[in-house]
Image 1 (cartoon, rainbow over the protein chains, first blue to last red):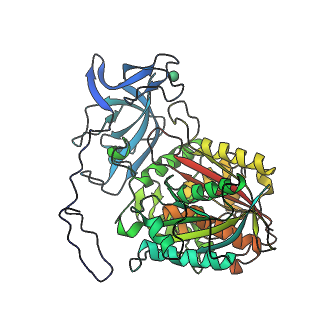
Image 2: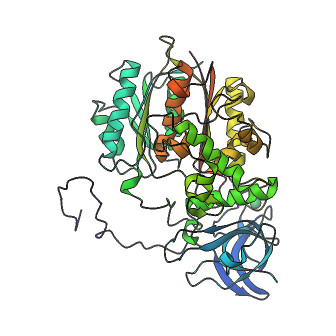
Length: 143
Length: 374
Ligand SMILES: [Zn+2]
């Protein structure tokens, strides 16, 4: 255990995580690109059953068929939504998230621009826009 | 063919910063071994989600159980019940005769706020904490079934009344609807008292292949599934389909229907979870759970009591220990040893645990088990 000092402490004892390796891994969030009709999620569509998927997995989650790169969005519909009142990472609370069913595309998790003020509802139409400052996929309520 | 629960034991539930995970497990193991009146077992299956390396071995060594096969399983909130399922299957197959199922979790040494799943998961990385995952289900459920914030809060109120009767529960105070709705907002519409708190605890059970006496409880069936893809083609909120399908496996194996259950311990990590779960289990029709809760059907003294222990919301939700804690409650209920929270004439008990937190999945795992008084 390099860097860790053996300590005998009276309980309760908080683990010292200062010597932990910095977290480093590729960004797992769906990639948002600027496409011909606005912003889009770069995902894949199954070549066997046509199922759309927002991930880079090599096979279809429904049938195991081969996935081929595809773009989805920008328009979609809110399937469910919540406003989170607890800060998470660099995100200050409150912030609003929605599961958005993109038209002919997959269900994606996105932040809703100005969500806490607008209080978006299920079944409202939204549109993909540029990522948040934190790099999260983001939608705005369609006007 | 059945396996039998010979003995169960648990620690207390709650913030136990003065105890190590292994120490909590020793309390549960000692009680279970004494309850079963055995000193040795052939193998142990141990459920833990965030348990550190070797926690199972440290726990078992402390009660003289070393040298045996030990298998540690992680299946999110269904880790403890997966350990139970695997112990059960090991006995049915004849692989082992006497098996321990242990669940142990020490969350307050790892988290200060809401539990996050895995940083490499795409939805976790987008800021969807566990309360948010369930809040999404609540959002959709309220839209589909015209359910209200009061309908959700009623689950916490009911389970807090049950928990008030459980001396080992984490929350032992009966709450009013106003208190539940007035507690701090976490993820709309879920307020603080609609979320299980951080909990440290352990629970253990000893399983054997024969009935030795009337205190032994029959494990009639257990089933385990993982969720399939949850996506834009899914009609239900996440977790519904996997609970429904796992329950059907268990009902068919036990030869029962949901209406046969006298008492249930189900997964209510958040209020919405219990509503969705009792519907997925077939105890209530789709959209009918709020009315059943309001009518007192799922309260102690009602037609089908759900979570007499206080559930995850009030007894506590030490993730990997939860499934085995649910088992302990059902064993006490079916033996008639549940004191103030005893369900009268309970013969058939139903256990359900469903763990999630993985993007695009209809639940990481679900276990449903059917128990019968010996
Ligand atoms: Zn496919």
